[in-house]
Image 1: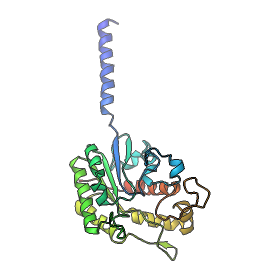
Image 2: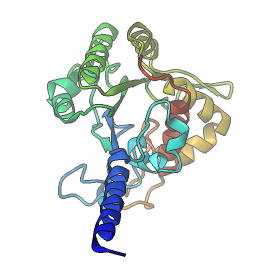
Image 3: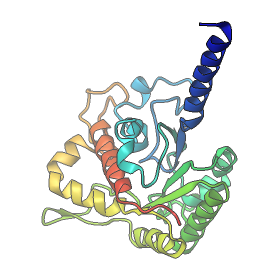
Image 4: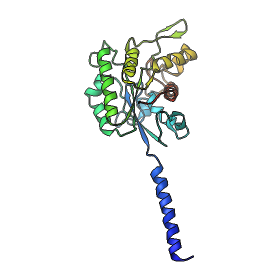
Length: 268
């Protein structure tokens, strides 16, 4: 074989390789914005502090969401994400409402980083509804306005916004059934989603239904931060907390979110 034929063959091989690389889709980033129930406490949430010693077993569902975005799972959510890989960027923070997340510059940081086809999943409501905490309280009218703002700015960047109603707390229970404790906020989120044609995951109802099916005793002991004294270094006196999750609860909520994503319709 002469040198010219060899050179042409090598050129064709290189071109084929370049074509393959060009066709491979870059990772999509899924930004999570919200409150403590969504936050990631394991990755330097408090700078310089050892998670296992100061926070464990506390876990937000965003902390365990990355495994649900594996390459094997992405085929189930092609309606929203068409990339070959996903990077979850958890920007949720404890105690934040739609208003304080904006006022503290946390949204600005996300907005600057957003690129086309990224996803923004927003779950607020726990702290917006806290009338006894004026530093974070946001009435439903303002709550809706901030959600509209996050949606519109996400779309400005070519990103895909997804609204989530707030995840259930472990109360009130009546007759073996869990009820909504978030008042009008879940409906307010639904109203914005309908108004702006935004994909919505009704995490309030999904979690209420799932927790009810598991039963009050089970979720109290295994899902929420109800801890006996002396078991965990971070909580030597134990803990009674029916809002925040242990790892099992966080994983189940993350699974509910992933399940919710499968039935979404993308933005038009």
